[in-house]
Length: 443
Ligand code: FPP
Ligand code: MG
Ligand code: MG
Image 1 (cartoon, rainbow, N blue to C red):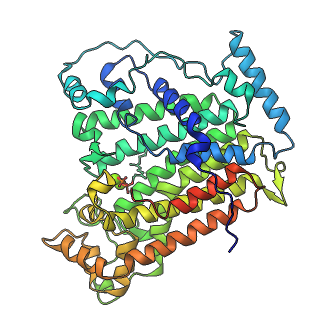
Image 2: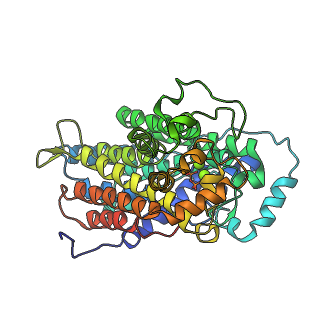
Image 3: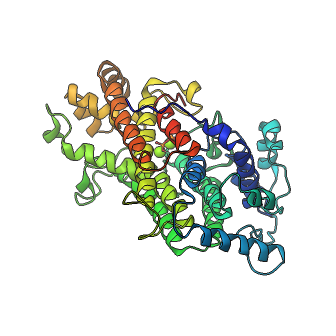
């Protein structure tokens, strides 16, 4: 019921935008230090899915023009472009400063990496000092209906996402990512962390150029959310874990906790608090970036607290609700695929990789509901011989994957519901398609 007939393909709608995006990201990441330059660009060498930037671009297109301030916003951005071309003032596209860096290292590691990546590396051999550009003609023709600041925001979301992946692969001891060796496995943990920091630094610089404190604040809060989500995950499934102390020092990590004491677990399924904790963590680690960047782009397009209303609702709340629900659906499917898809299909560790990290995600929590004996394994983070295999077996026998999918479907539908409150457009259709496709993705 209520299915739309026209379905725009997001990739087709954005194909030229996405090649701009890749080019621009590469130039945002240039460093005069060759090792840093290589590592910072490493995860951009392969075709990522670019889900986050795609959402920002489409949400921009779906909402631009709705604000009563739209012409004013557009004029201001065009003036800024003009000034930049005349060499006056900092445009959003001014190249970021690159400090001279003295080389002090043995290039052998770099050479090894370059050998490994011979072909894909060529993809980003463009000059690091070239200016990222929103070609004046694309802006002027404005058939794309995007502001330069919105394009840059799309790039920033991808930088933040990839920064979090660099850190994540250190934390998760992941050997692969995007169907290739992970950054830590090639360059080591220390350089991977630093490269992630470098990406965040460049993202911050670019963010400050957007000229909106409200947007800076939103995106900065995403960075805090990513870390909070990761820490919640690391500390276990009970909200008061921190209050319970750090738990035993033994085991997989020193902050190992305290999901609940073993006695309270035996014979019982997960409590509602445990599910709530999981959902909160999921919002923080995945949905926050998508939700808040979707909101931010409507702000750049002129949506304010009292402006930009559609049938009584603030456009920015619609964008946020879409992103929040889509992000939650996305992570639920990710957690399901960890059990149902192979590492080869995923291009990263799979086949119960989360269990090996001691993590109980939605499929495990639902399975626990059906097989109470799982509680004990979850509580000790699957750290005894055979725990991972036993848990995997029980989870695959349970309806954990189906129930996870059903929950993802609810969130996908809620995302689509939010969109219905925007006027019809190709971009809105494409956002709807993303929300549907998130359920059938296999990687
Ligand atoms: C992937 O999850 C990781 C995230 C969604 C966020 C990770 C966040 C941090 C490591 C905090 C640091 C944050 C910043 C901004 C540097 P996953 O491990 O479940 O997915 P995977 O299977 O793709 O590895
Ligand atoms: Mg992780
Ligand atoms: Mg990971």
